[in-house]
Image (cartoon, rainbow, N blue to C red; front, top):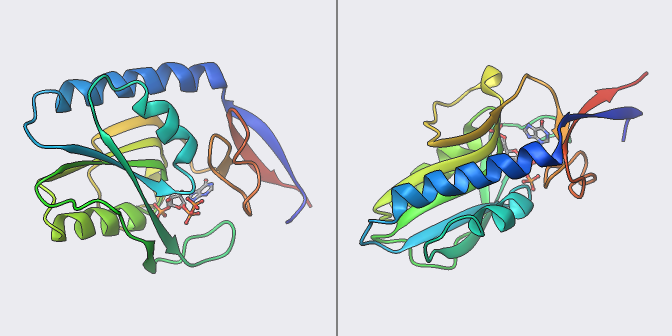
Length: 178
Ligand SMILES: O=P(O)(O)OC[C@H]1O[C@H](OP(=O)(O)OP(=O)(O)O)[C@H](O)[C@@H]1O
Ligand code: HPA
């Protein structure tokens, strides 16, 4: 790992408040659906966000996880998305809410949304804690966004730099030092 420093970008109290708001929004949208609702977290980045968010949804939902990889270096995505672990649940006829930590190029969510629709999901919505809209390579409609952030490399609350820092309770900005 290169020499770097980390500064707080979004403190834990702001994340807490936002997670509560997102949970309420999702609850409002799903509570009248006759379909089963499955929250699908994308590993590993969404794990902490997902765990907090589902507790803020006052409606019975299932939890499932997918693992997808976009090959690349520790700070860049390559554009090639591959499914490492599929959902366990049958998604046919279900309402899916994909839970993601961050959207950057959009390639991951674009691919996963199409994949779940191709398996017969009745609807697929997307909830991301962070949105970096500046480097989109694929169009994705995001239904629920926590924070729009500048084009900085961030870590914490599930998000990693070379697999470290997922355990930080806040979102931090990484600056490389020379
Ligand atoms: O919009 P994109 O450019 O596709 O980038 C976003 C994806 O990249 C990161 O995942 P990563 O592949 O690093 O896996 P991780 O969740 O295990 O950290 C992040 O968690 C998103 O899933
Ligand atoms: O800012 C980021 N941090 C960590 N992983 C990422 N994947 C896309 N953007 C980021």
